[in-house]
Length: 315
Image 1: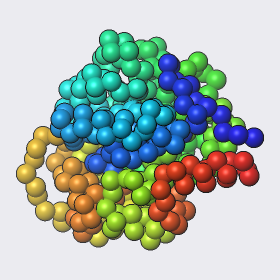
Image 2: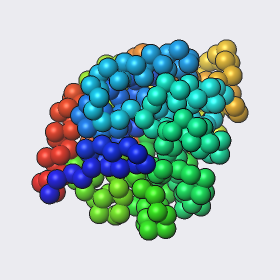
Image 3: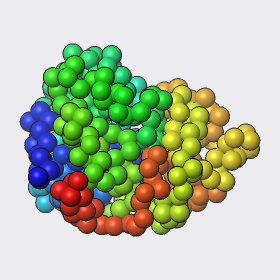
Image 4: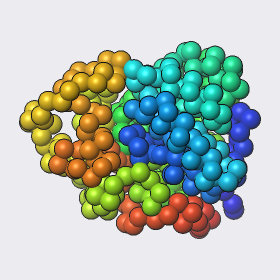
């Protein structure tokens, strides 16, 4: 049995695999282009990039993809520059747009204007139905197992069971998808495909520092914890010296750049993620999914795809 293709609106790719849009600069043009070239949907994280930087990453991804797969952009709705970044990406000719951490109604109209399918990240049937009604081409259903900002404390299997069969657009499973066996499980639950973040953050092409990637390899099962993000959502990250500082309230103040529409200012999430991406882990937040401990090696994207296909067939 082979992995089936994935169709979202007018976009069709050989494999039902979407690479998660991980900010800041983890999911860059290099990674997205490699995933698209391998036959999936590569996604650039636009959050916290300038409009010029975003266009440069899109161009880089297109060049690397060699016209294979598809290139998408993900921007958090919570970002203060959300509107300009999404419109910039659509004008630049991306294949598909993703958004979460809040719900934008306007993005669907922009998608129609630029002929770009829009995919909403959801964690409940109510929001999935709203997305379908507004014109979403698909929904990514994200459970508590996912890394980064979370919209739920419920496991993926429960939310999938609630949503599959209740909407007509494709349902993409996200959170805790690491192996081909996990993909097989998701498809058996009725999902049309999967979104994988953590596995691709631990690729040679991702924008993460070597220190960041090594933290993944060093992770134990108990190291996946939840933190209270100033975005107003819980976040799943690796336990570290920095998360201990957060717990004790001992995080140094930074200059606020007003990168979020609303921010508790308990600490600067942008600075913490940038530090991790650069390898400054003592002051950096390493977002990671619940099953990060299962990753044992850093691999090139094409090798990750080959392994996923093989594992799926074996399962």
